[in-house]
Image (cartoon, rainbow, N blue to C red):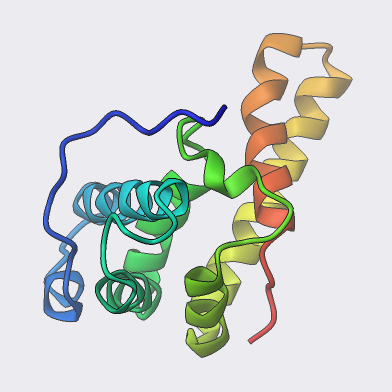
Length: 148
């Protein structure tokens, strides 16, 4: 059974909230809010947040480079966000990626390349305890469409 990410419910960010992000830490906080809502929606069949609200928040996060980095840093690395482990990505995320600017896709590709390289280095050095995060991130990133 899937477990729900344990985090208090926060209002979903708007496009204006994302435009005001000044640093990666702020972007990651907003990304966490969106990812938790996406996780809850997937567990509740979409009832945790309206599809329109969540779709808007995902599009907002992916509309800027720093917003995309904040979103992907949580979606791709947080074990509790297990919606990212499914064979099919959530439709709201897929649609947002289709509309996302090239910088968003570059950030995703960079994440895929770096996490795969990190995993390979840890594997070569037989650092099994460090391989897990690279494998998790790389596996999740490889399931997302990187066109655009």
